[in-house]
Length: 373
Image (cartoon, rainbow, N blue to C red; front, top):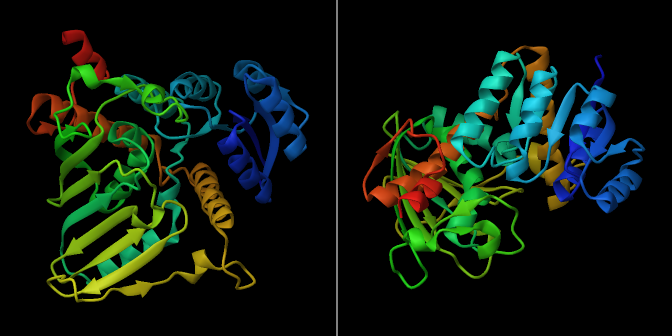
């Protein structure tokens, strides 16, 4: 069994989650961590028993020469470490969103490809076993032909921030079932219902000071439609509710003979409704996946245990993609296409019309809008 040496860049909360997953895998060795903040380096190193902690990631990867680098920094600090690792032959698992703009995302994908590096983006929900169960139910004809998907945000954020936070997970989730997008049509408003304009473009941390840095955003409420190249239509709502409700977050897959509802951002609740129509008095049937819900002793996993379980599946997929020379199931290209959907949403709203893929130019649409304004 090959032992993979893993280093982590960014030692905050996500750096801790990734470290737990690495140390839980018998063919992985956590060898080093990097963060610009000395207290984070000290706390993380003590928690995981790692003496090799660094302030600068270039120094770490050249000194330690890991097989895999996990990049758990915020969005502005995904591009440069990915390129540095790929150019040195190191495989990459990167946090979402993949980057701040499509110029960066394209360069990250192309650099990894040209250096024969496996590049995975941590769209954690894609690893859920419930997705495989839903895909099998669709293949078995449980809900007939898929014609539409609906997605709902969990609330607690304005639409613009959520697009770069939980929205990227929602978009990736839709792509898992719908494939590549053909066009987007979006309508973004402020809380009072007024159209969002260039004057409303803000930095993520100006909108929500405690959010991660994800660059410029726009919109407090959002109503966004996509057509996928296979003919499926989707609608997504970002309603900016004050309170977060994770059990309301998720997607509905609507077919000619029924629908599947998949909910929650870490743990999963799934429901099946069969019939051509859904009326308020018709009930849903709960669908369960014991392989994900229960541990090896048959006990119900806590949310933290479910997160670790899914994180380990993400890591295992990357390892398998390395060993079998295949594309990871949550690839860098998938991450770039999710970011493209976010930018399509903003560009469609600006143009007040459908916008088709590929989005051109690749620079950030809100930066271009501000420049023109």
